[in-house]
Amino acid sequence: MTDCSICEGLEQTLEARRTDYIEARGSAYFKVSTELAAYKKVELERARITLEEHRLICVSAPTVALPRPDNRRESSGSTVRSTRVQY
Image (cartoon, rainbow, N blue to C red):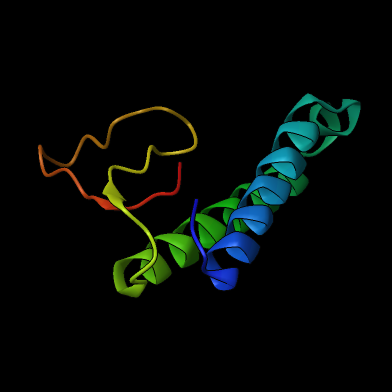
């Protein structure tokens, strides 16, 4: 558990963005327009990146790999990025 209030806030934001994206992908509206789901995906990625960047400098967080939200590996290479994650 981290003592960093910034980490906690960013984790809550990430989880909220993930929930929003999942809801947007599953909604009937998605069948009509993918724009909402695309916007939610961008917001999800922004939240993930913000959290990763903070964890790089946060002294309270342990270092482990943070999985991508879509559970796919990047096809651009074999480099594994790591950041700090709370258990």
